[in-house]
Length: 590
Image (cartoon, rainbow, N blue to C red; front, top):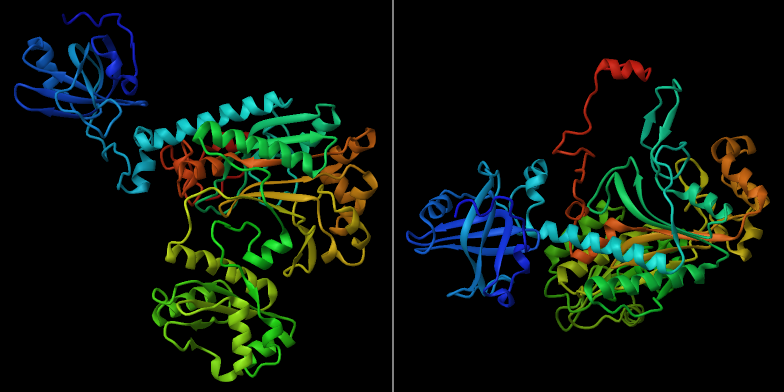
């Protein structure tokens, strides 16, 4: 009896068994989730990546097998064989809750010490501890399900783009450092002393060269690297669904991307995404939502009160408008019971923390509104504010007076804070295209105009005439795909005219020599017949994070970094010995 498992192979995964398997003789493998010894009965929950099945040992079990079962502990690795039978007590909490395996052969394949935390869904163990023992954390079913969903996403991705004529081509990960908006990770060259490779922030330049090479539809699930401060939706190394197409305009890119999103959400989540997806220009998004990645699952749009208050008796409002600023407001419907004066004071401090000088308000809890500035206003002015903001009894209006950029960004942030506190954000998927981005962004520190996207983004045809004189009027053939307030993708139609590209470099303050030093291998290629082309990169990690309903990228990446860019499990980054440094001609500084 004890030797029956010699040479045996797994026949089923634990979570795939059901009542249809009743009477079948099966062999399963996995980890012991828990063991329950009831004297003459022993039950063990056996876990693998598909789920849990109960192993049963009773009076009919061979004595030696029973004794072996009594010694099992959590996270022991075992192989068990036996007949599937119906359980006397059904467990509706698990997929296999109607059946169990009457074990007649048992082999312990690996022992385990007591793990530092219990392998459970929704573990309340400290995240730092879980990441230090990430190989154990990855055994948790909820994390495994995230990784399995990610696998399915990449499978559908490759299938969809292959069916639409895209060719998957790998691009280098040791490249020349070029300015792309974030700091590069640099890799010293042993052979070329004093020279460095960079890890790619994106495959941007190479995929454009592939268009020049005649591969008119390129796709890659690409690894990218950026040396920047981290947050919940950012990692120093991340994965991008990268694509580029020749002979296209923005509408062609939208169509391919929307077809992908529709297919992906249907196959992976059985969710029907209605297409075409809605669109807002960058200007519309900023004016209505105070963000270029707005969450449109709820309303609360920003309203402009500047024309109403420009001549009012409240100097904070009037002086702001006279000095070229703006007065904007959001209305939180039915919020007066939640936003007491104490809560409004807290929100005011938050507003100040993100750049506002203060926060005016109207709280309409009683018959007469409580307003922080009403004594300076006429009755007609207040009535106009109520009408413009749609304020009614039960509502709270929050108002910021400042430069337009600050007022919009502050209210955009407060809009999200208020919506979360009121719990008014529905659980659904709202996709949105943001189009016609400004080409340039004024850098107040340097006094220069920087490219908002990369410098190969094509300007709108009607904007080219403003390049030399009014850069603030130049808009780009650039577009972002936003989902529930998170930027999923950024893309554009590219410049292929060498003369226009040179003009754009000059507008960005790059001399011909500087441009050639940084991008010469690409601009030289444009001289040999460049097709019109454009594309985008979709953040795979962020996409999976939203599809899994997670709040952090760390929950959908097998071995993530923490906020200081270190990986706790392996101890990376780590010092290297002096011999390695000498080979790279690098001095060890302590």
